[in-house]
Length: 379
Image 1 (cartoon, rainbow, N blue to C red):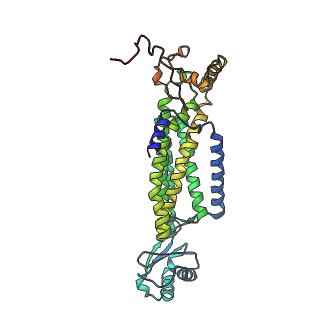
Image 2 (cartoon, rainbow, N blue to C red):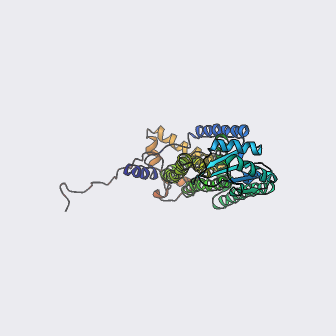
Image 3 (cartoon, rainbow, N blue to C red):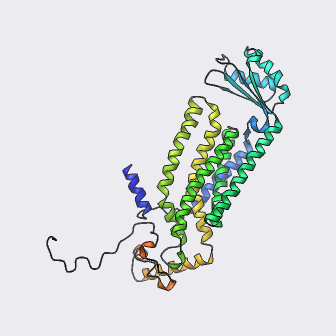
């Protein structure tokens, strides 16, 4: 843990780092490949919508049923003529969910199930959802998601700028597409819990993205008044300085969600936890990935397309070329530069106001060190 803390401090101060922005084409390619796979899974398999969205009936039997899940599923499908999902609850009762069935046939389905399960019909609890109500729930869910996206883009455009808002929007679409595609591939049922999970993971994804954007905004203030770094280099510095924080928050959030998904839903058989836990697990991982590998590199691409940033990049590269021609190491030339030394660019900021470069920084030795000091111990 101490080594991780030391690494985080070194990343924050720019002593070590990884060039995420330089390798952005690799991350873009990986994201495009995953997104295409998710879209194909969604197109081929489709989403298994719950009764809350398409209507249907849920029958709950008494406790300690002797019938197995597979037997009850077969009887429910024969009685209704539709696909059925059967879950065995902790008290031994069965939860039989039949989607798409007409609510008017529920009484007949209930009678057939009571005969097959050898249970009095009055002891089987039936919850009915009409198709019109299911459509209304689905429309409300999409409206809520759309309003959330619009408000997020507006807020980011005001708090930062439109390029960062656009990059965050692309990252959110990336996270939603991957999560929904995996839902289709796995075949889990989509319920209102799934929608809640989607909104939750979008918040987590935005949290990591906004942290990086805030650091980037602070470090790129008056960026055109210096010739030390390009916008892409400072963007990369911002990612590295917040990298350990993003990893820590993501891992801490994933641990309880993994418990719900793999232990609660898998080993304990609490299938009702799968709808929300899967969306949270996939979405949290995708959100952490997109905030590091998609959002900030995309902002760097959009910003460096501006004429001012293009001119800045030319000045930075020209200064480094001059330093190389004089035989000075490139990293030393960059590290010893400052806003104050770039008087031609109009900068008057102190040296410690400039953001640190990613990579080891060579500190120049003090020229007056040791002068006039007598040998031996100081008194």
